[in-house]
Structure formats: C-alpha cells, structure tokens
Length: 403
Image (cartoon, rainbow, N blue to C red):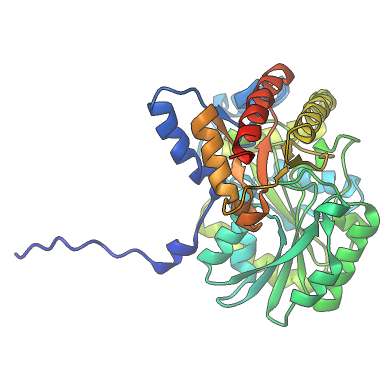
C-alpha cells in the first residue's frame, strides 16, 4: 500500500467563513501565555460577569433531568415550550401558533436553519452594516451573498433607507433586522420598523427579525416587529441566552408569522429540524418556566446595564480621538477612534490587547471599513472594573494616536 502525505483538501467555502468575535481570542491566548492578564470584552456572556438565570429556571431544568427527560425530544421542540413561546409572542401583539415555532440550539441554529431554507447559491440577503457576523458567515457557507445596507451613526445607527433602496436587487431573498442591535446597542423607533416592513413587502422579502435582546432595552421590553403587521412575512429569533441570562444552555427558537406565503417555508424548516434531531431537551423545560414565571431579574438586569452603558459612554467620549453613540439596549457599544494615518481598526485592537490586556473586537469584523476605526466593547464588567479598564484604555489611546 502506498502512502501519501499530501494535505487533505478543505472546501473553498471555509475561506469565506469568519467569526471575528471568537477569532480575535486566539491572540488573547498568546498574550495570556506570555503572562499578561486579559480582560475579555469581546463576548456577550453575562454569566462570566456574575449574572445568572433565575432560580425557577434552574429548578425546571434540574426537575426535568431528575424526571428522566434526558433522551431525544420532538424535532420542533417539546409541546409546552412551543406553546409558551407562541403565547408570549401572541401576548405581545404578534399572533403566532405553536405549530409555527421551532426550538433550536440557541438563536445561532435558528439563523442557520432559516437561511438554509431560504437562500440558494448565489442568492442575496440584505444585512445591516455593522452586522452580527454569524449572518455573513452562514451566508458565505451557503455560497450566497451578503449585501450590506448602511446604518447611520449620525442618526443613532438607524437604517439608511436611501442606501437600502440602492443595494436591493431581484436576487434578494431576505432582509435581516437586528433590533435591539448587536453590535451597536441601538433600538429602532416604531416608524423605522414600519418602514422596514414596508420595504420588505415592496420587494417580496422575508424579514429575519433578530429580537434576542428585546427584553433588555433599557426603557423596557420591546414588542416584536411582527406586532406592527401580523400578516407580514416575518421570522423572529430569540432565546434564553440574553434576557434570561443562560447563554450556555443553547436554548433558542424561531417563530414564523401567520402569512400563508410562508407555508412552504414552514415545511422546509421542519424538515431541516428533523435532520438535526432536536435541541437540548432538559433546557427546553426552562422555556415555559421562563416565559410564564417571575421576570423581576430582568428589571434589575436592565438597570445594571443602563449604569454600565452610562459609565462606558462617558468614559469613551472623554478619550482623545474617540466618539461613541450611547447605546439604548443590550451590553454593547461601538465607539469610533480617529486612527493615525495608515492604521486599521484591527491594528488598534491588537495593539490595545498587547499593551494592556484589554480585548475588544475590531469593527471590520462586523462589516465596517477597517479604516473607519470602529471597535466593539462588551460592558458587562462591574462599573468599578469598567472605570479601571477605561482609564487604561484612555492612557493607551492617547499615546497611540500621538505616534
């Protein structure tokens, strides 16, 4: 038998697959190995900063495990969970039936399933810029094309409808709307949401509504975008990860609006769900508990995030060369640094990490131009820790831009 030592080929699709939020951590590991403490402000992971899901959710999962709910479950999700999700949407003004809900392994799987069902090779999906990079990664994996539409930092990161109208083509299949937004922390007023639905209707698009941060808008929970038009072709994504502080449970869902135009899509999504068997069954038992139980933790969480957002915005705006739009939801800010000539956002983020151990994510990982100087901060650390971090960041930045 002859042996060969040539490398096993990898699909060319992988060269287009990138997820900057995790990829940047590779350099952080090198910095830690060299003996420097790293402050991880790259991943929106509330439990890493002391926030935990409420006790009644944990008890529901423990009870399910002890009652033997450790095998496979129905591919769309257990009935109690799907009914609770449908009732939650319906109670917020968007009528959804349980048979149009799928429980998934986090919102990430929901996004993957929806895009896989919708988009053919060479098809197009309109995604906001900046965007959550999983969308562009999955679109690339499918051999489709992400088409960025601009959101405007001079208008609190609201969508630029003139730009959206210029970039849409007949190949577009879906419009991604991330509201509240990751990575900017923006929320959209009702009129903007209506305009997005109208735009999708005009161009025959499905609205992929990423609403995972809907419960942690600082002014209170936001209604789903589908509540503005129950017959619009909307798929909503959400999960227990953010508003219920359980990202490691990987328990999310998608809900499909009642529009009869999406009947074939419902069938396709259920077929795809069958192929991956089911999401984690014990954690599904927490969904009913979460959506029908005590939510007082959310008010406390929103208050804590508002305080951290205020600390973050003030500190960043005080730094030389730095500007920042105040977030109104979630735990992200996307400041902008006036970069020295020839430098990129990636250069700054790496230099900041190596000099101070502070890890952020370069804005170009979310689709902005490397020369624009945007970068994302996760501000889940305590206010005291954030003040210390921003003191170090400010001193480093002053020196960096003066070189």
